[in-house]
Every structure is written in C-alpha cells, then in structure tokens.
Image (cartoon, rainbow, N blue to C red; front, side, top):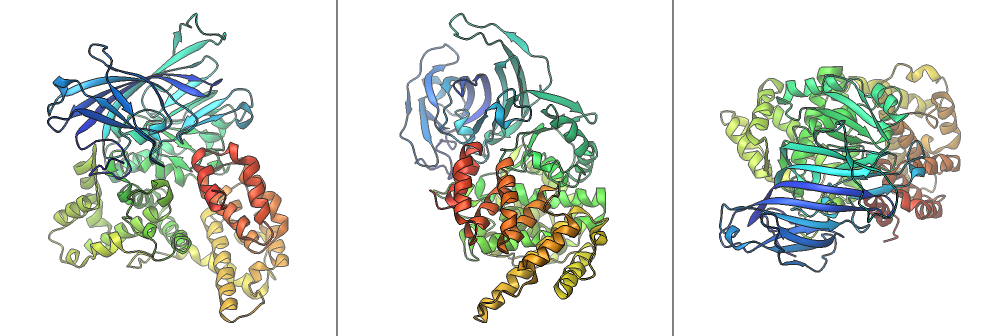
Length: 636
C-alpha cells in the first residue's frame, strides 16, 4: 500500500500530484444497479519528474483512460486490491505535464459495482410510496472511491461539476448548486434495449470541497421552500412533514453566520432519505442528507440539523487534514452547535445538552476500554479503516477540549472572536491538530494560562478528558428528582403529568439516569458477589408502570424509543422485543441500530433473535451499517 505523508487511508500519490477539478458525466441504471460514465479530472503537478498519477478506487470497473487534450489513450494499471482501501489506479502522466506546476486533464471511463460502500440501491418496497426505486451515495470516510475514481482523502480539495442522466420519472439531486433546475431531455441511443425515457440534470460546486462530500441521490423527489435560501427535499408525504419539522432552518443558518461568519454555499437544503440511511445526517454541502428518524412530529430533534448546518463552516469550509484529526470537524461542530442552541433556545438548554452528553462519552469509553487507541482525540489510524474508529469520542471529547480552552482564555467574550478568526484563517484549507494548536497559541499569546495546557495529554491521552468541565445543570434537576422518586417509591405517587412540559432532551436524560442507576446497582451486586438484582429499574412491574404513565414504548421520538428499549433489554423484559425488532427493521441509523443489536445480542433473552433479525434484514441496511453490525454480532 502506497504511503502518503498526509493520509494513511489513501492509495493515491497526493504528495506528488493533486486533483484540482472533477467533471462527472454519469448515467444511473436501476436495472443493473450500476452508474456508468466519465470522470474528467484536472490535476496540478507538485513534484518535478512525476510520471504517474495514482487514484483511489474500490470495486470500480475501468473501461479506458485518455488524455483529455487530444483524446489519446493513456497507459494505466489497476493494481491489486488492498483490503479495506481498494485498488490503486496508476496512470501515466503525459510527458509535458511531468514537470512541477503543470496542469493536465485525464478522462476516465468507468462503471460502479456492488463491491463498494458508497452507493445504496433501494427497491420500491424500501421507499415511502413503494412505486419507484431510489439510490443515494455516502462518501464519508473513504467510500467515495467506490463512486468515482479520485484522490479520496480530506486533505485534498476540488471544485466540481456533474451531469447526471436518470429515468424521467425520477429526479437527481447533488451536494452542489443546481438542485431544482429544469433537466434537459436525453436522446436515447438506438442501441439501448429498453424503452426508458431519460433526462439529464446539471450541477456545479464552485467552493473547494474534499471528495467525501461529493454526493448524489436519485428518486421520486419533491421540494418545499422554507426560507430565502433554505428548503427540504423528500418523497411525497415525507417532504411536507420535513418542512414542518425543520421550519427554523433559516434562523439556524443566520445564527451560524453570527457565530462563524459568512455562509458561502449560497443554499442550505435538507434531503430526507429513506430509513436505511446509516447516519443522523451527513453534511453534504448545499444539501444535507438526513434520516427520517428526525421526524418526531414536534420539532424536538431539530438539533441534528443545527449540527449539519454548522458543518458548513466546521468540516466543509475548514476541514481536517485526515481522519486522525476528525475532532477538528466534529468537536468544533458540537461546540458551535451549542453556541447556536444558546442563541435560539437559551443558555440553560445548551448547557443541558452538553451535560447530558457526558453519558455518551462515558459509554463510548467503556465500550472501547479506557486504554484503547480509539479513545484518543488523535488516534493512530495506520492500516485502520476510519469507520472502525468513528464514535462519540471526536464529537464530545473534542467539544470538551474547546470548552476547556474557552475557560482558560477567559470565557465566551474572549473566545467568540477567535471562532471567526479561526474560520477566516483556515477557510478553503485543511489542517491538523498541530496547526490548530499553533494558531490558538499565537492568537492568545498574551494570555498567561495557555502555557499550562497539556496538549499532548489532550491529543494523545486515552479515556475520558483530562479536565472535567462544569455545566449549568438547572434543567437536569427535575429529571434527577423524578428518578429519585422512582427509586424510593417504585412509582408510588407518580403521575403522567410528571413529565408534562418537559423538553424531549429532559426525557432522554431521565431514561439515561435510569440506565446509569441500573448499571451502578448491578455493578455493586457483582462486587458483593450477590446473585440478586437490586435495581428497581430492572423490575418488570416498575417498568410496566412507568410505561403506562409516560408512554415511552409508543413515543414518536426515535431517541426516546431507543433509550427506553435499551433499558428494557438490559432488564430482560421480553415484551419489548417486538418493538425492538420494529425499530431495527424500519430504519438503519447506526446510532440506534448498532447499540440495539449489541444489547439484544448480549442479553439472555435475545442472542439468537439479534442474529436472526440481522441475517433476515441485512440486505436492507446500507453497506457501512451492515459491515459494522455483522462485526458486532460476531458474524464476520
């Protein structure tokens, strides 16, 4: 495997030559489940006497490679596959372009296959209206190489454009400008065997982006405008619910500008995908891809959209050099997300969001183990699939570092201008943790306390953050009090009105507290060599009473359903199993799917049910999700 100085997860020679612009001409075939077409890539030669350009591919069939300037064929080698990372495509560079500072364009004609993780083809049965098929791509972290040949590493940015031909009944959208523009008719070749009518959509992305942010979706899509530069895409029936759920998007973007500076992407739209989408959202520029599990009906999960909006600055505009420094994308995004929540909902809500998320960090560290490499803010990822390392660590541990730094320099008043200065300094660029450290130390050079920061411990230390930040816990008090009431009385004196008027995050926190209480008491039992299980939250009668009063099982909020189901699985409540299976099979969001499968698999009652359910439904999940769950269940 070729080694790049900037990225351990690429096979490409980005140190010698770099892609500058990508122009795609693609056609989607739902019969063969293939995307065919051409990638015209313009390169800039960095090092003198560079004879080859090497690109990342995974599962692609390369048909031919030609010099764009004169259409002459170029010699290329599609090298042997490297597990996890794909196949290097080594192409001879025209002689005149082998000198430094040269620019040249190569046309690569190719087809996709089902071997990569970027593309999911959905049959009509997996869509909202059950009439037409659907496809979407997901490039993060290193999956774009199975969608197009490219230098698939975040440290290299490009502008790009695309022309995508799809069946006339369907609409194509991409992470670019051009969504909603009228398509062109496509003249069907006489060699084509079917009578499908086609049309072609055109897109362009003038802002520099990393290859993992080039995304496509095709389906029976509709659009509804929300604000001057915001709107939602989705299938009929979904788009209306999405427009209601995300009605505040324009305010969110404006709040983001107040914190980070100008929004440079022109539009911010959201596409709500079918349930198999493996993430809460992905920050595709101009068009966030989002899970339908956010459609709670009461706008209680819109903080995920704030998160994706913040990526317009932290991740998309300012980008981590490689996946070792992923916290620069996600930790910064969590930090700014909570600044926007403070502006929109008040400081107590933002502080409570940070407070309740400590459990996510604790759980993740416990899952990996306190000494595990993946609990580092900057883990070693040599010969590691970045997907394996992704967790709440870069999000929450990264947030805690930034919160600590803010405290060191004097709080929000001092730190707020730094956020804008940071974005301005690194906009359209990539950076690593040392670059961030150097800029921070220079900006706050006159602040005495910065010299006491243990950067090495923060970047390379395992386990929980080395400093415990303090948060306003005023919104947590009601949840703690109600939990204590259940501990002491097992539901006596409790009423359905107990949680009336609560924010959804307070209910989530309450269930989290029940889990913590049960885990602590079970741990104490083990320490005392007791065979009894003393937690009231592992007693069926107590949980039945709670569910009757609060209706957690039937909640329309996926986060509440998920937490309640985890609690019931750990209590070995067999009645919850059908509801768990329902949630597992109606969506494929890894935040829910992986923990539910793990919990069911580790329970006494559900080990075989977990495996049987996954094997039966594996084809419904996105390849990334299926790969990770298969490992969780010991099937691969």
